[in-house]
Length: 288
Ligand code: SAM
Image (cartoon, rainbow, N blue to C red; front, side):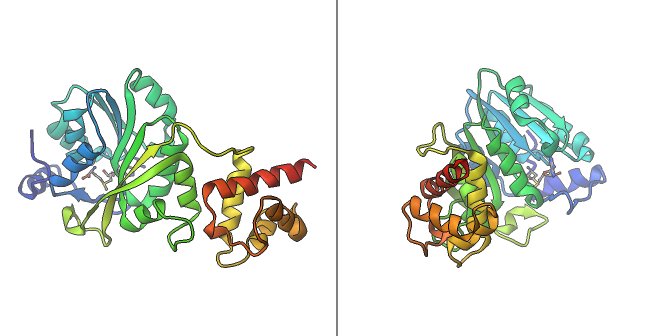
């Protein structure tokens, strides 16, 4: 197996194929072998797993996934990488490469078609320019056991943030609604070529099998969350009145009281079950 993380192997390989990194495609390739090994190991990839990888690049993580998983499907946008991947991962018969934009795929259909009978997982060193849309698609697909990804460290901190902290955001609530996050390890910029300007981190999202809170209407729940964070450090009633014009100020105050919160409560301090209580009161208010 070619050690694609060895810079003395990688550089001539790229040069041989006239490959130049594309900043626009988020191409920062791993040059530290411990990183893809640790991602595959800590993700818990084994021979019961069907793994969807996004953005194999020249294949360092793909190799580690193929060594452990039953099946790997890797989705890559840049078909200039084809002859290089033929060399670096062509030997694996449990690998299928899909040459497409991951955001254009029907992820649940793909998982059903490719990973029948297997434990579906997603694993990736993500292209950072589309971290949020990719993570949203992977979580909303509701078909993975876990999603283990490398992202910018500040994004990882945002995903794992606690209510009331500076990093807590609507994206935190979105991710934690679908999954339980665990920060695994940091990856310094010198582990990549070219080096990104930021530190990276690997985070695992264990997808919830059940949600322990009642939500009457998922759309209203996410609208409530969005409205609550739209006006940080302001009273929640202002955010709700602006996100739900149909409530007005008095309706917003009414639902907050009905959900059992003081009138000066701040949205950014609420947990998911607390957002659910408010969203459910909004549903009831609208049904009156
Ligand atoms: N996995 C490799 C590694 O760790 O060295 C490459 C990771 S690099 C950060 C991101 C990869 O995602 C690149 O290969 C890039 O071409 C690919 N990519 C970018 N946008 C994509 C998209 N929309 N769909 C699929 N792959 C994409």
